[in-house]
Image (cartoon, rainbow, N blue to C red; front, side):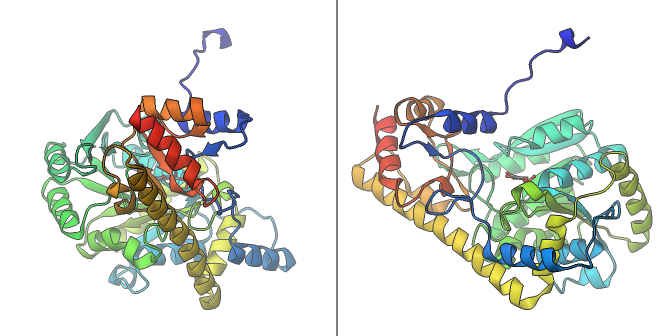
Length: 401
Ligand code: PLP
C-alpha cells in the first residue's frame, strides 16, 4: 500500500530555508522564514521570557500533570483581554469564551473544525495572496469551497479595496472570511480604519462570518492596542466572530506552540454547548495542550511589571524592523534601483512584499545566496546592519537585469 503514495509538493518556506542552511557561502542571507532575528542574525529569547522561565524552574509547586482539554483558563482569559482590550463590555456580558490552542495554526484548525463540523459551514474566503497555510488548514478541515478575494494591487503596491469588496459581495451567505488582524502576511499592507468599516458593513449585510487571524499583535506598530484596532472594531459592532492569537512572534515562543482561540457570541447562554463541542474536537485531535508556553505568557500578562518589560521587548523588535525598512529603502533609492521603493517603509510588520519576480528571487539565490520566497516576500528581520549593503546591492543587480 505504501507504494501507492505520491510525493506531496514541498512547503516552499521550509524548502527555501533548507537551501539557506545548505549553502556554504559566507555572505548567505535568509530572508524567507517568518522568525525574528537580532542585528547579529541570531534568534532572540526575550529577556522577560528567560526571566519567567527561571522563575518557573524554581517553582516546586508546578508539575507535569495533564492540562485541561481546553487549556489553562487563566492563560486564555489574559490572552483574550489583550486582543479585545481589558475592559471590553463583552467580557462583563459573558459573551466571550476562549480556548488555549497549539499556537496560531492550531487555533485556526480548531476554528475550522468547529465551523465545518459543528456549524456546517463549507465555504471560506481568504486574501490573495495570504499566508501559505490558510487554504490547507481549511481544506483538511473539510471545507469544499475554498475561494480567494482580491487583496494586493501589484501596480499600486497596495490594497485593492474595491476588488476585495466586490469579491466578498459575491460570497455565499455563511461563508467564513479570514481577515489578518494586523501586519498582513505576506504583503505588509492593512486596510485603513475607513476601509475596515466598509469591510465590516459588507460582512454584516452579506451575512458572512469574520475570523481574525492575529499573529503579529505588537509586532506591527510596537503597540498592542493599535494592532488590535480592527478586531476591537468588529467586536464593538457586536459581530459573532472568532479570533486566533499566536504568541510565536510577539513572545518569540515559536516552538512552544502557544496560542488562543477567542469566540465572541451574541447570546452567553450558548457558551456551555459551544465549549462542550470544542472539548470533543480537541479531545479527538490532541487531547490537551502543552503547558510551558501557557505558563510563561500567563505570568507575563498578569504581572504589571513583567507586562511592561514585555512591551519593551516588542518595541525593540518592531523598532529594529522599522530601522531596516528605512535603511533598505534609502539604499535602493540611492543606488537608483529601477522602480519605486516607498512601499518598503509604508508596509508594516515582519514582511515586505517587494514586488520582485520569481526570476529575480532566483537570481538572488543563485548569484548572491540571498534566499527569499518566489513571491518576492522578504522577512525584514533577516536584514541586519552587517548585511544591508550586500542585500541592497544584490536587489539592485537583480532588478536592473
Ligand atoms: N497566521 C499568520 C498570518 C502567520 O503568518 C502565521 C505564522 O507565520 C500564523 C498564523 C501561525 O503561526 P504559529 O502557528 O506559529 O502561531
